Amino acid sequence: MAGATITAYAVYLPGYALSTTDFRAEAGSGGRRARSVAAHDEDAVTLGVEAGRRLDGAARDVPVLHLATSEPPYLDKSSAATVHAALALPASVAALDLTGLRAGAGALRTALAAGGLAVLADRRTDAPGAPGELAQGDAAAAFAAGPDGPIRLLAAASGTVELLDRWRAPGAPHPTVWDERFTAGILRDRALDAAARALADAGLGRADHVVVACANPRAAAAARAALGGGADAEVEGLTGYTGAAHLGLLLADALDRARPGETVLAVNAADGADAFVFAVGEGLEAARCGPRVRDQLTGRVPLTYDRYLRWRGLFTVQGPNRPDPAPPAAPPMERRRAWKNALVAVRCTKCAAVTAPPGRVCAGCGAHDALRPEPLRDLPCTVVSLTEDLLAVGPDGPTVQAVVDVEGGGRRSVHVADVPEGGLAVGDVLRPVFRRISSTQGVHNYFWKARPMEKVRHG
Image (cartoon, rainbow, N blue to C red):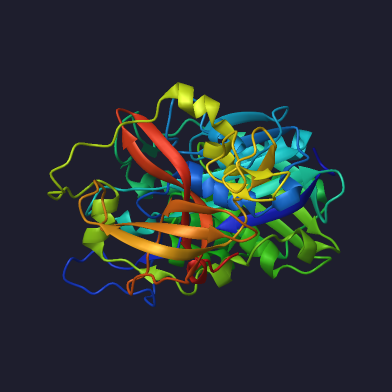
C-alpha cells in the first residue's frame, strides 16, 4: 500500500451550526464551541453525495466506491449504491458499505490499497442533555486514490483492541458511552503505538502536521499533545466529532494547510487505531476540490436548539392533519432510474428543447423518440414562481415549491431546501442538491431538490 497516492479530495460541511443546547439562549455561530448540523433532509447518503460530486471527473475513473458511516439509512440495502447512482458512476464501478467509527479509516485504507473512491459521511446524534451532545457533528469527505497523485502514502500501521467505550444497538437513536476516563488511556496508547510504527516505517521522527480522530476527547487531546499536534482541535471545536467522517475531515484540513515537501500524520482511534503518513508533493492545489475546510466554517446559519431537536425527531410537535406521503414504488423507480437518481432529463435532437421529467415526446416540438440524455444536476436554475405549503407533512415548514428555468433550457418544478430566513423571490438562482424528500414505511425517498445559490458556500 505504501506508495499509493490520493489524487483528489473534497469535504462537505452542512450549512447549519448549533452552539448551545439551552432552549432559552439565542443560537449563534460565533461561540467558542459549536457543532455542525445537517438539515432535516440530509443524512449520510446525501452528505456523501455532496462531498463526492465535488471531485467531479476524479471520481469517475475508479474501480470501486466505499461508503463509510456509523449511521447508514439502510441495513440490508446498500447505501453506497444510492451514492453511486447519484454520482452517476458507471455500472461497472462496485459500491460497498462500511459501518462503524473505524469505517472511515477502513475505506481510506482500502482505496489506497487498490485504488478507488472513499466517501466518508456521518450524521451524529447524542441523547438530549448528554454531556457530549454538542461535541458530536455532521460532515462528509471524499478521497480518490490512484497511482499518480500529489499526496503519497509513505507508510501505514494499524492495531486492534476490543473495547467497550461507545456503542449503539441497531435502531437505537443515540450511542451509550462508558466512563471516558477509563477508556481514554487505552485509546491513547493504541493511537501512539500505531503512529510510532507508521512514522518509523516512513523514516520520520515526527510529521509536520498531525491530526487525531477519536470519539473520546481525552484520548484525542493526549495523543495530539504527545505527537506534536493540536491545530486539528480548532476545527473539531467548531464541528464536533463527525464519526466515520472525522478522519477525512481532519486530514483534508491538514492538506489544506500543508505545503509541498511537508508530511502529514493522520490517526484514527476506534477499537484500536489506524495511522497513515503522507508526503505532500507538487500539485496539491489541483487535488483540492471545492473550498477549504476552514472556509466552510464561516457563514453557517445558527440553529436554535428546539429546531435541532425537531429535525432529529427528538422533539415531536403537532403537524398538519394530513396522512404521511406514500413511499416510492420499485417499478417507477426502475423505469425512471436516471431521472430519479442522477437528474438526467432529455434534449430533443430536432429542436434542442429540454424535457424534464424525461419522456418519449419532446415538450418543445412534439417529436417522438428523438431525444438524448441531458444531465441537469450541475446546472443552476432560476425561480419563475413560488408556492409555500403549510399543510405538507415535514419537520420544518413551510414547504417551498418552485417552478424554475434551467440554464441551457428546460422548466421544471422543484422542492427548495435551505430556504433563507428572508424567503425566496422570483429571479433567485438555485442549484440542484440531492436530499431525502420523505421517509415512509421504512422507505427513504431520495431525489433532487434545489437550494439558493448564495447558500452554497462551497460550490
